[in-house]
Length: 105
Image 1 (cartoon, rainbow, N blue to C red):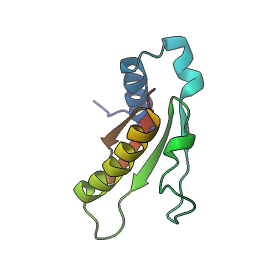
Image 2: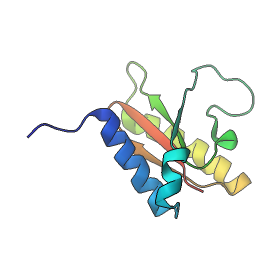
Image 3: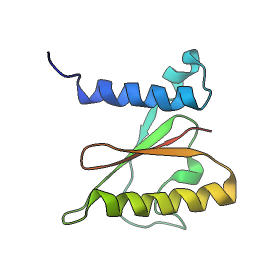
């Protein structure tokens, strides 16, 4: 049995995250949007968390020599900081050699 393509797996995971956040099925297609991030710090935040809409997501790849666990700790700290100050909700998952972050509410 062939495995699903990475894009299909990403879409299924995104739909599960949005469903768990209470987003209706007909809204899911219009919400899912992959954001591109740069590795340079511009402004106050390392990631575009405060500017994200529900359903938007981005992928943070591991840099050479960096473990996924260390990256996940870094991303979690940023997510926690933004969540406490803004009330926005996010979820994150390990995906291959990096972390994907979704805004869920």
